[in-house]
Image (cartoon, rainbow over all chains, first blue to last red; front, side):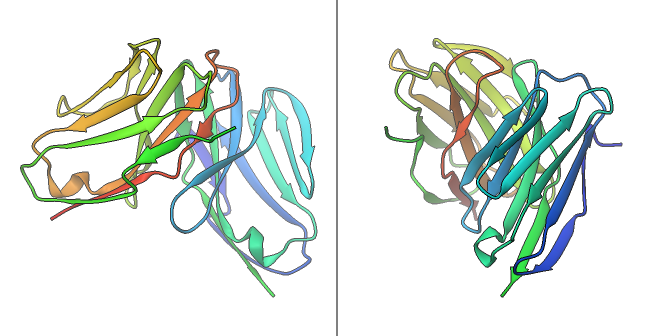
Length: 107
Length: 113
């Protein structure tokens, strides 16, 4: 069993839909990051969470430390949101990464 | 404020050669970590440097090495390249503490032929 799991693996949505990507982890962590990777490779850090909830524009991230679970929500999705979303947990000095969720938002 | 800069962006090498990749962190950031991304294994941690010292190392063979300079710029080196080393190599920088946000570079795509 991977230390960090994500669901779904792939997601196709219509423009405007509300999207949820889930991340669960099995190890103790100091922080959890949500990352976005567009084709071409570069990674952008969307959120860093150690508790509660954060919002940035149309993106919302929540974490439940007791449940070892985090969700990333995208409201009013847009084709430019199409990317791979990666959950990464900070364990000591390392990151342990989830396998990623590939999101395609169709116009 | 400039972001994390990785050079080169693309590289093609032959099996058996060695390669050096460079990462310039955000100004003021002292921690630089390196990751390998392959289609089969996803993102995996290589090593982390802080103040010119390697703080942690992932599960990679000794052919993978790195260093950090006094200006926090970091290099990673892969010797005796194998086909399986073909990957996107990413670096990330952060201020220092493990609970600070990490910022990623665009990556270097290495192809070994």
